[in-house]
Length: 162
Image 1 (spheres, rainbow, N blue to C red):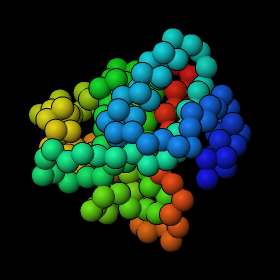
Image 2: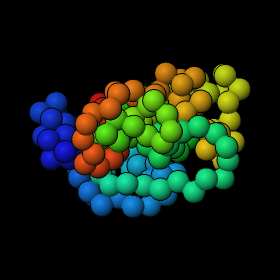
Image 3: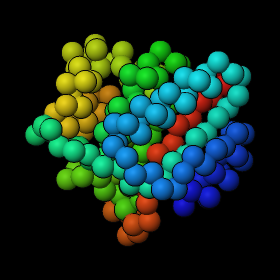
């Protein structure tokens, strides 16, 4: 799955880096790491695509609604806040993420500002494992329905030209 995604990104003009196909850390850490990579490259004039495949984990600390892909995406939002040409999305190849109807989530450089306007604190949401609610408020849920396949989760960090 990652190789096909990589080729498609390159066809769209992105310099593409496959970071790993063995991602296996906390979802929040993966989201923060992807945001850090985008912050580093935001100073360049390049169109960049960073791909990480694997399966992250979530240690439940709250009673909210969501899944590991939604939590990964939402955790990237603070790190890319204000970067107008950056986004992160993460999806499960089977079309499901946790006990929700979403396959994953999407955030961009304006997500944090939008959440603040809605009086939603991203850090509280993450502590409550309630990424679904926050992403729904920002229209950041990725809903595909069941795909009939279960290969891997894939997280993508994109940086477009300014």
